[in-house]
Image (tube, rainbow, N blue to C red; front, side):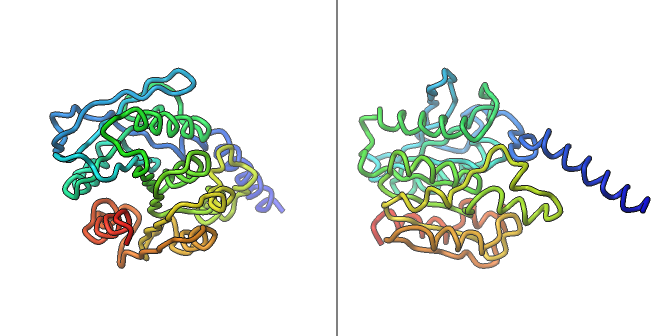
Length: 267
């Protein structure tokens, strides 16, 4: 009886801790973005994105030497800052594709505190910035979401459709992923930020590319497949073999880049 009571007390304590600290467990904005001079990118300019609630977010716009034939807005995952996505932008630049890299509120030295509602507002600011550029063909703008950023990209796409949508390691909802990692907790009842892409994906009617690693230990491949199945045609699913969630193959790997370029070209 005493052991059962102790176990119950421990579970209650852990549940309370997760409830209070959940956003610190979800959002990991470690480190400020470095100076542009220290980033190995060419033809890149610092940008400022103005959010609807008055925040100014920092970003980089990376463009090829020629007029870009497509522009990609990158929606980061839950950790780090935009400098970690510089290799992706550099690879896309080699194919004549422009890229907007930016940090959400609370990331990369930006003001504010990250929340689901806040990240969606930041995404809208990124789209407005790209819409303001005269060198961007507005019919050829793609959203690229990575991990947590896939949910941001999906919600924005349901509201402001892009030309194409690319999701790397997506999931149906944060609750579903949380239940995988914390099966002993009532995750669905605890979460304040739900990032329920499954509720939005059916509203999107633009070409869809889903990329996932078959050894992903953070977002299992089956989760990405389920969201893909709920999406509308035309769509394509690419599995990167032997790739875990944070492997280079899913950052700027040749197979992933080739899949993105082919997809943007309409293949």
